[in-house]
Image (cartoon, rainbow, N blue to C red; front, top):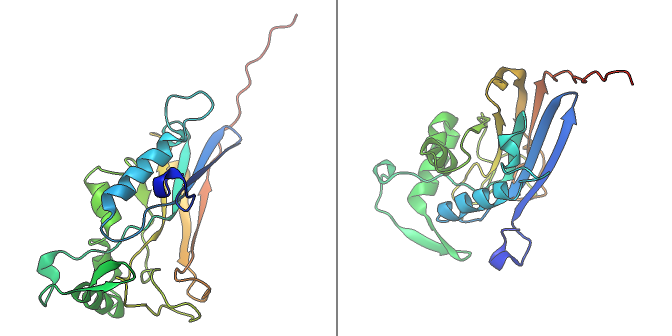
Length: 223
């Protein structure tokens, strides 16, 4: 629980661990701190959540000893344009208890309309923090090839954005494999579901295949 004062359970993470044959799998579902300016708090949430995955008497967190690990959920990292990308003076407006920049929204919407999702990712807070080694060390992110999944208008199919927020890739799937195991896990599909319209997020899904290691049994000596 990383929610407000560690009392309200609106943020945090859950761990599921299982074994298939001789291969261990770890799944961490997380909901991190919201709002564009809370990058460091999100990083701290990740550290706290992973620290809480030290199970079965292990000193390491679960992703450090499982063959394959997944970290996913509403991670809440936002798109944030650098000052040189802005074509107009920085003007902030207050909406729903936080400040958003009209210039950021407008430029990101232009990139979305152009289908230039690769350019969007270079302004993604999660990619910036991971590249700097400040969060989720050893993990890699499946790269979306669709518009941001937040913040969309409820009740509307497709990607129609509420421009009171900067559209962002809040919903993410990351993976990590132990050294020597990376090629045993392969991404097969990664999709958003624009037809789902019951939330201000569009859900995402991914499918993976992996090669399960055999189970070795130590032979016992006859009595």
